[in-house]
Length: 206
Image 1: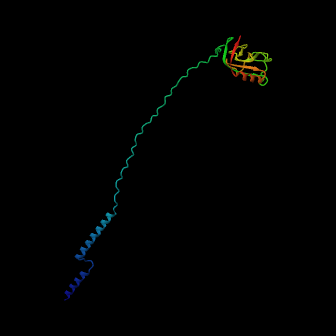
Image 2: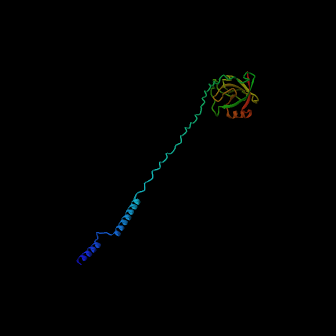
Image 3: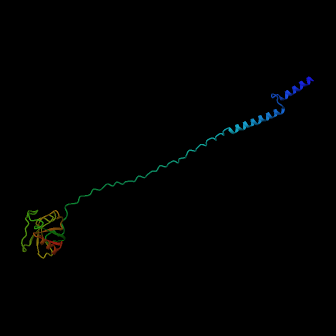
């Protein structure tokens, strides 16, 4: 009886000892470990960073070759000026400069003493003077390059029949077709041109 009691106690002690495991407990433990291992493995897979894809190389821009623009240079033609011959000062005298000949298209002007003050000696040395109405000889200015001092002329159509002698000249009296007749009175000079006009025909006297 005592031995049976001891055997029962030993059997009871064996079942309640926490250090002993049954086959069921071993299977549960193995399954739990497997689940735990799978969870850790899955976590590792989730935690593992996804590798970045390799960078795509950026293509370098292709620069088209620039064409050189050539600007045409204008051609400048250099013309050498031809020498100009100086005008001859030996101009011919107008047709009809001889005694008894007539010259048409002569421009007539006048200068005076009482207003303009031309009352003294002339370019030829003759002193200006004017006689009465009966005095037919009058003084005038001309271009001595064409009409020598002392040349005598009358104006065709002059009712007074004055005879004009070239004894003077002036800077404005240029060329063969200009005579500047002299009057003492400006009023007389204006009246004379009003009668004849300023463009006349003259006759050269001997």
